[in-house]
Length: 612
Image 1 (cartoon, rainbow, N blue to C red):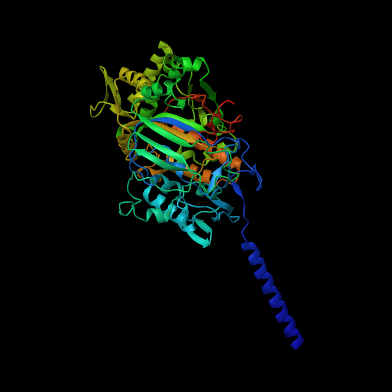
Image 2 (cartoon, rainbow, N blue to C red):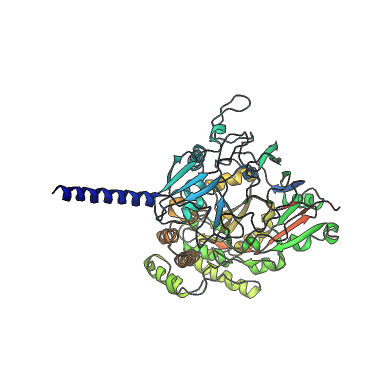
């Protein structure tokens, strides 16, 4: 009996030890040097440098850049004010993207990352050598402080990180983020993206002994852990950054061959043409040209002819970016709530005439919210995409199943006349009538009119033809051009009738879609739901996108959402060139091979070494 009891006790103890060992093994974190939301990372843990950089690029010279508008703030945490260009150069993030990969990120402040199989959390282990500019170490407390303040004071970050329910210190150099949903593989990746701020600096006092306040705008240069520091500020007109010789991360494989300019300065201009003249005169080193007509007609000056200024048209940035540029009617205004009114506005837009006469044929009409990528819908839905849409049949327009989306085509008088007739017919169905030369509400007699909000005189040239076209069918459209600060404040508070909007999409759409089109973002100031979309079907599709377990499921859900957004005519699609048109003086240069998915500017560029 005693032997049997001892045997039983031994078995119980052995079983308990086995269970304890299994539990300990199950809880043991699997540390990774990076993350790929889809597929595998391209670079091994012991990679020496990114494949598109010149590790021997000189650390010298000044890069002079221009920007249009002004600035009044160096605190990128808050929604108020206009942040200065380039301020992100002073900060590091937990992870850093390789521009040769669509989905890959590698450790920067973090030396390793771990997450469980159900992706209910993610843990980052900070590099021991990571330091702030004052020499103090970057700590888990800094990371937690940064997330909390960004979510508290920024609508953008609050929406983007809404599934991150909290962060806690779980080791001397470890911080763990908890999620309110599982199996969302994008969450660990995006948590590695936000700028990490120095808690002790923001909770300290400035040179005058005043307590700093992270909830307010400031022109005091903040401290960071990144490669540059702010060395000079001219409020509203210019800012200068200086490369830090003591930057803790300058020799990391993820950073080699990058941050090569000794100084980077931005000068602000009130007018795009004045900025261009400054470039032409050699006072600005680099320019990305957004005007097709200027690209064709104005780059014929001597420096271009003799090779001192180099022109390049590159598709790299658009290989993995879908762009929707559009006129965006604000459905928070009653006049835009009827889809027929919004559709009529598209029939009044003559892209072909604008492209021929103003852009010299250099533009393409956008016909998808993911234009130019594999995520763009086309034709009629099939397969898994059709299956998804059938599940929403009672919530979406019937045309999704019967009629592929196409934009009206103009360009000649007959087509334009037919399009305007169609627009008038749609408006009549929606309760508007053309009487004389005015479009009036059939019941109230209210005229149909609205204001198009712009933030630059340079946009006026491309918008004026649309205003003229709308007036032909009795719509009183007016342009309103305001300064950068007023524009930002009005957009954040949705104080506009129609605006000129742009959304850039990655190849891995996810949580940001709720900020673009989700019902919860309609009344949240600062969200990018510029159109005021509150559609239960779109909300369901966003949930399907973020919960997709495979790339196939993700693509099908994205295409289905694209179709629903297009079928509801939430925007009037405009145009894009599909290439980055850059011009730069030959005193700066880029590596022989650019990244697959970007220009690598300014990180991988450098001052040209003088000829020996």
